[in-house]
Length: 165
Image 1 (cartoon, rainbow, N blue to C red):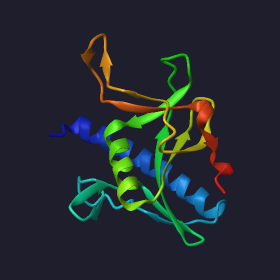
Image 2 (spheres, one colour):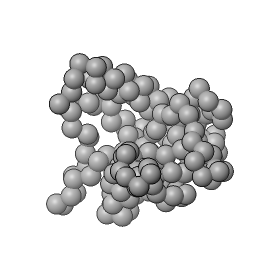
Image 3 (cartoon, rainbow, N blue to C red):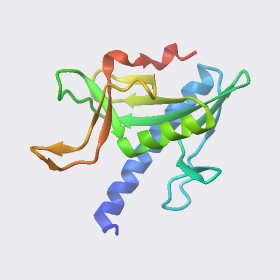
Image 4 (cartoon, rainbow, N blue to C red):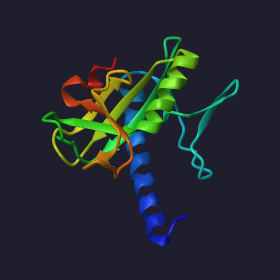
């Protein structure tokens, strides 16, 4: 159950995430010549989904079309990088990662992740194929589960979205 403060924080994070998704969508439309179907429809508290046979997948943010091809893009707005292992990294929720991987396998449409980094250098739009992750972290700290599990991507393996043409 949301407290008033949790609800306010959630709404603030949701608005920032939607703003980041819109930046990515506009870039893909204007610079990469994609047609984009965004999923900004947060009508309920349920995450948008894709239904396939008996599966219900969490849906990536954007479905993109160009030259008869389709790709999925999930946009992640970030304000900082991490450096826990001596490498500059960024990441996101392992649950969503696993959902996107299953979706990719079932429908044979590639999933790309775009990290929209602002505030802390290096800033910009960076992309990678979902399978190019550097490590998975189970969320444990000092031997106990403290955080949600995450998947991380090494900065050196990311490419500027300018090259996504």
